[in-house]
Image 1 (cartoon, rainbow, N blue to C red):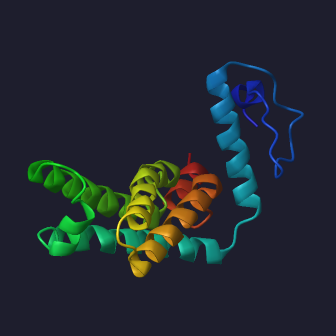
Image 2 (image 1 turned 90 degrees about the horizontal axis):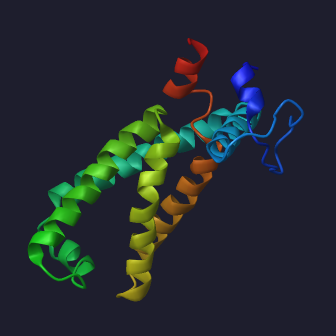
Length: 173
């Protein structure tokens, strides 16, 4: 382990195994230590099924982004955004969501900066779940956004896994 990693403040997780070589440091190091522990745990407990799930999530988010662009003038999109005033702001929001889904879907599918891409998706998916619960309940939309939200939370902690661009870059550095 590099010497700079030994200076990180330990955070106890149920899956952390090696806390002896980590020393106390600043608050930014808490985040770095957490990410390092999560990466170590994920690399030790990886399998191809999680990678297939990650690729499927990325492909689904990419599809939903393309669908948002192609259906941006549909009545369903306007129904979802009807609570917000101003049609110009509604169209801007639809395009931001669509671009976030397209870019995030590609990044998640290939496993490049997966945690960041998933973190960008979390507020969008949380808002989708809330919008489905508060308005007219669309069971299919609620199920899709709820499952995507749960999988995104999983990959926020799990990371990209061994079969990803992140892992390949880490191994070649």
